[in-house]
Length: 391
Image (cartoon, rainbow, N blue to C red; front, side, top):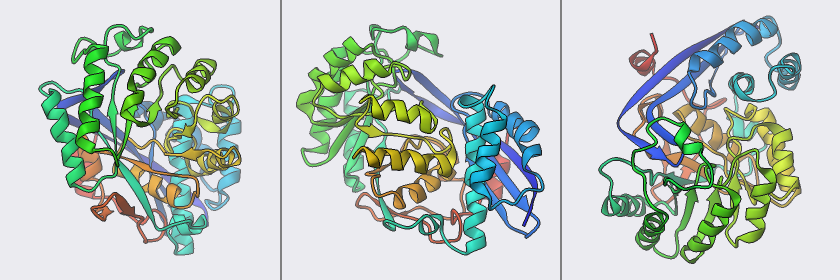
């Protein structure tokens, strides 16, 4: 079997009411679809990362740099092809757009492997379970969403059976860094630290004492601010505090982790085995959060999971993009014994709700069954591709 073609499809969805974190203004949600064709009639599908940038950038790397390396290659030599792409791009890659491009290709190659074997990927990887706990990822800042609105949102997750919820914190002027001011619309939905604490208190009350609550600062705090806010939030029994400081401040994150009783989770914005080696071995995190479409696909993220397991550490993969990433994360989680939960984005996002022909198999009690079809076990809705395709 040989690779005969690699294509990309750029998609974009615009939300009616943008959501905001401490470091983002999410008006437009993008996705880059990758399709790999073979001479055996098997086609692999995946999403490649774009991480807030234009999908065209990642598409250019795939189509003009990586595709020429792969045409004519055996798609089942996945480890070799991963190392080929990584090694050939080492002088200008290793992170960022090139790793995002490698990630999408890797996932699509594994989709082909699963289809060739007639097995769902989580079973091909050596299944640990066939269902995965998912948590509601929401609690964003939005225009018109006051404390009552946030409370109603949390209550809706309880009604839908979720056992865990994540919310956003940290969108105020003084964070110890200037990161938020560098981004689009920094003046919207600014709160005080006291208002943020009240938001967390309201969500904790709505969830009750037996559901897990996580809070995400999206890298905007200095270590001193993170420690101060973390101690103020300790009474609300956070399951984790996510990305409290800048991704590259490994020592600062380790300082925060030592100072707080709350587990530190991160860093979705780190990529690759070598990046996670630093976070794990230097004590910067308690829970690892690799993103499959940013951090090297299944091939690299399974190595990250193994490294974390060797350090008695759990994972909760970051998953905040299209339905294809979510399905890939389910397969990854179901085959990894140290994954505790998978993120399930609950914001308005047509590329999550409309992209696939198959519905998600959610049991109404916090658990998601993994697709049982070969490979990823899902197919793309071609009408949706045309609806949101970037022309």
